[in-house]
Image 1: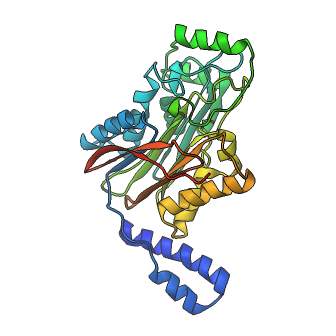
Image 2: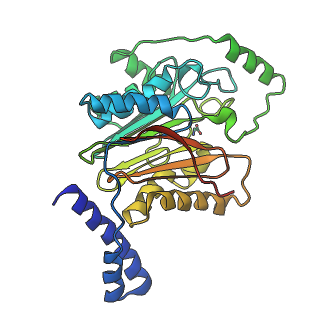
Image 3: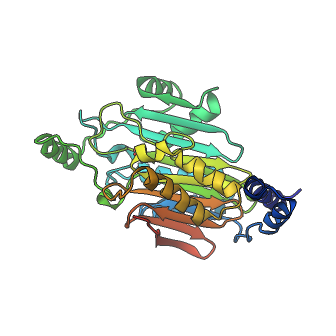
Length: 329
Ligand code: GLY
């Protein structure tokens, strides 16, 4: 069975199971089977969070065009943003925690569901590559903190200590009151999450961040958590999240989006439903942002956010463009 037919069958089965659960009739099952989702544009498609997604997409696209794997593409795409020391929410240029340490979280997942993650990592330029190495070279999914750093240093990664006067000055200013106040869309960027599908319908995703500015030392957000900041299922599609990680973790956000797509819900609607789950738990939420991106394996994509201001970058054969997501609060 080719991938497209297999996907439609899976989508239809999911939809049918839902319809049977509600209506319990053979007719409902037949009707649901007929409502298999319309075909997407096919790959390659690269989709990523925020304005900084443009640079990540461009690199990921270049890797795909050069014949690289979709896993290489998602890793090398976000690595561009990790190396940008002007970026204050990804990589070593990120804002520190409340004790003055920049700590990094990342994860990666491939078409076959293999996953690697690293959290609370310091002084390593590319946490996404550490996550991939953990996936490929250990029997584990996630390493954290000192253990993760020691493992990385023993496995070919090098330490990079970065001291940025601008970040140091902002931290000194913050220390005067030392209050933690969330700011939705802070500096209009946050985590980079990137999901991609190649021409053969193979998927992969990556997610990397320095996390919330001035977080409690040791705090880990959604970005390195498979199912929260990122989820890839080669039979269905992929999703990633950005924004206040605690809100994403509580609804297993990216997994929720992919599971909705498995049931036949189209990508944008799947993102909307995940946002609605957050809003159901936090009615009237205005001071936090969460944004979801979804990519079905046939290339259809969607996005939705809690509040206005979530931008995302989409690279198709028509080019690399920035879009604004719909929002619900
Ligand atoms: N989404 C990034 C974080 O909450 O750390």
